Length: 178
Length: 200
Image 1 (cartoon, rainbow over the protein chains, first blue to last red):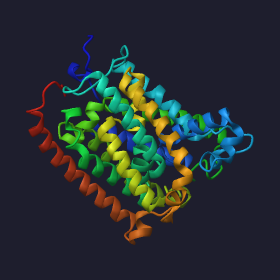
Image 2 (image 1 turned 180 degrees about the vertical axis):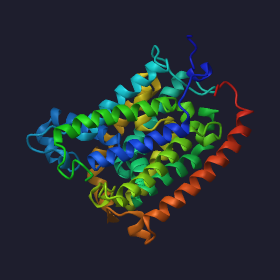
Image 3 (image 1 turned 30 degrees about the vertical axis):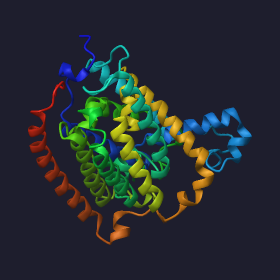
């Protein structure tokens, strides 16, 4: 049971169409209850704003980007998205436990690259995502998935661009994955 | 009736408690669908695993159609829900940058979080990158502020921009999704024959 790549184990996943239907129903419930939608990257932004605010409250308040998210008497992390993302960690852990996918820390990578290289490209990918989500007003969850589902023009645009761009660059980075 | 919170039917505190439960369901579905593996996710771009496309588009069309029904039956006032605003130039660049990040990093933000909790170090490093990326964005923000706010169309929907009704858009997306499910099934069958070291 100690193989490096979980995929080789033939681990069990939910039927993708069932997963999709349940996720769609979850989005309807979210909109119905909260009037807003699922998201992820906004919570990371809230955390960065909080960090900036803790390190230097005055500088963060005066900052043109951080400043707009800092309100008197309220932590920048006291947001709906931060609570939701907290749940995402719990939910993923539950699923990981149920499907027996939780294991000792390891690096998953394609067959043609080393663990070290995987970590380097993961960091670069994360930085690009962090930057991109701020320009795109959300990530795959908040902009693409939720935005498209609520017929937002920008949401559909971002969804198409994320996928189109990844397909466009896929050939260049094929060594990472195949 | 709905949306409940904007209509004052539940309090702000309850809204946050519910947010945790919504997150639990979201995280569970992402992980259970196999989104906690970068190799599963990247598969959609090389034709060996279309799980992303299947889950994503099924979710979008179910939500689209469902929201229209809720609106039609008067259960939900769609004019009171949040519509992601559109800022053309910055969101176009943002989308392209995220796509590049996807193919290099193998995760998107939410999927990386689900991978962290099942022990994937590459996901943890990716998430560290997210924080760095947002910090860098804030650092250069004064120089790109004008670009960031340019081309503001407001909180516009597909219908606002095109004049085509939401029902037709939902129908169109459904047809495209079904065609994509069928096409991806054919492609996947072909590509999987020549992929090594990967169990499906």
